[in-house]
Length: 277
Length: 198
Image (tube, rainbow over the protein chains, first blue to last red):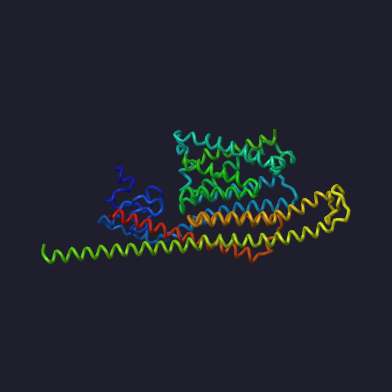
C-alpha cells in the first residue's frame, strides 16, 4: 500500500477521510479546510469525480459548529463541576464530623480518581498521544527543569511574602501525623495521587477539550484559572495559577503529560518534606 | 476587438464587481454579528462587576452596623487585656474581639471589591476573547458559591434568586461567546476558501 493510500490524503482516493488528518476533527460536507486547525483537507471522492454517498451521509449528520464547540465545552465544565462537587462533599463531611481524618481524604481521592479515569476513558482518543511513552522527546527535555526552577524561585518569593505578612499557610500533613498514619500514605495521597490525577484532569481532559474550542494559549490560561480556583484557598490562587500555567505550557511544549506529572508530584513531595522537617 | 467581445468583458467586470460587493457585505455582516455576540458576552461580566460593587458596599454597611452593635455591647471601662465572654460561651480578650470585628468589616468590603475587579478584568479580556473569559468567570463564580456553602450551608438559600440570575447571566454569556466563536471560524474558513480560489 502506498503512503498516499494509507493516509487517505490523495485527492483521487475513493475513500477520502471524514476527519482531519492533523487534528482528527470531523470535516463538514464540502469543506476544503479544517474548521478546527485550518489545515487544507483532501477533496472528497465525489468532488474528484467519483461518488461517496457514505461520506456525504456521514458529513450531513454532523452537528453544526457551535453545537460541537458546546459539546467540547460541556465535557470540560462537567469534569470541573464534578471535581468541585467532590471537594464540596469532602468539606461538608469534614465539617459534619468536625475533623479532617485522612480516611475521608482517602475516600475523596479514590472517588476523584474514579471520576477522572471515567472522563479519561471517554476522551481516550485525544489523550492517547499525550500518554505515549514515545511522545516525550529529548529535544524538549530542558523544559521540565526550566519550569521547575522558575516555579521554585517564584514560590520562594510568594510564600516568603505571605509568611512575612503573617498570613496562615495551610499544613497538609497535620491530619496524617495526628491520626498516626504512616508517612508513605501522606506522600501517596498528597504527592503522588494529585501529581497523576490532577494532571490527567486539568492538562489532560480539560486543556484538550478547551483547545478544541479556543486557541491553545487561551485554553492554557483557562485551565490554569480552573486549577487555581479549585484549590479553594484565595491565598494560593496566584501560586497555583502560576503552577497551572507552568504545567500547561510543559504539556504543550512536550506533547506529553509525564513531565508535568513528575514535576507536580515532586513539588508536592517537596512541600510535604518542608512541613515535616 | 469585436463589439461582442467588449460586451463580454464588460459583463465579466460587472459580475466580478458584484461578487466583490457581495463578499464585502458578507464580511461586514459577519463582523456585526461577532461584535453583537462579543458585546453580549462582555456585557455580562461588566454587569456582574457592577453588581458585586453594589453588594460589596451594601454588605460592608451591614457588617459595619453589626460590628458597631457588638462593640457597643462591650462593658464600659473594659481594658484591652480583659477577658470577654461571647454569646457562644467562648472567652477572648477585648482587644482581640475588637480586631476580629474590624477584620470582618474589612473582609466584607475587600472580598466583593476584589471579585468585582477580577470580573472587570475578565470583561476587558472578553472584549478580545469572550469564550475563555466567560468560562473563567463561570468557574470562579461556582467556586465562590461552594466556598459560601462550606462556610455556612444556609448561604445556599440566602439570595438564591440573585445567585440563579448570576448563573443565568454567565450561561448566556457563554452561549453568546460560543456563537461568536462559530461566526469567527466560519468567517476564517470563508476567507481561506477565497484565498485558495484566488
